[in-house]
Length: 301
Image 1 (cartoon, rainbow, N blue to C red):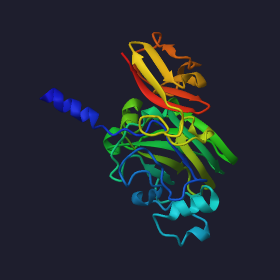
Image 2: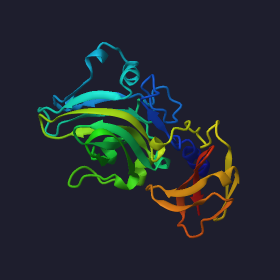
Image 3: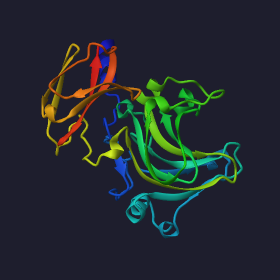
Image 4: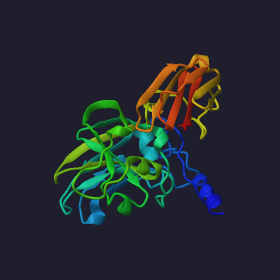
């Protein structure tokens, strides 16, 4: 009975879509489609340090100030093709901060497995630098608020940058050390955090955010098992360490990526891939090409 309960718990774990892309030029509601079935998942929100006694804030264009939620971000995306705002860090809290974010699974901040994303891509413009922050479920207990972050440099013009999981780090000297894989398995929120000295001010535009590699393509969002209904179907079957590709495999390029976002094998998708040289563990298989857009988890034993 105990084994059966454990298996049921494992199957019930929240898992985000293997890939995602939010694009302000096509969004009309201000929501990131993460693969969660929850109605409260993915909605963009602003946050600041007011709960910590701070006075930092984010302001938006004047024509957006009278629009009520939840249509606020969607209306901004339609008007500007981006989330457009100004951040001002003020005193009141020792480490001023403010930013924008979205919950991966729901507003109760349940965690979900986002490891298949491989990292993030980001289309943005900003006069000051910021960070992409991974907020785990039970943040206080897991990291004591010292969350994994990747540094995003300021950019004078619209820029697209990619961030693999190995670019994310915890700060040293405070909080609790946490294993990155454990955080990725139960990520509750993704935040774009501006932090610095009081009186720091910056303007920013966020046009796109997606899983690793998705910002450079404009194909449809894959469904939860990795196949887009408008692309040519591909099937990948693993037998031992031999991966058999069928369908439209010959049209694409097959890439195997580890959970840190490293490409460990890449080859034309000609039908068979020998994975015997790889270590045991979880990997992502990606097949891309004309009419082909397939992403799938594979487990090597």
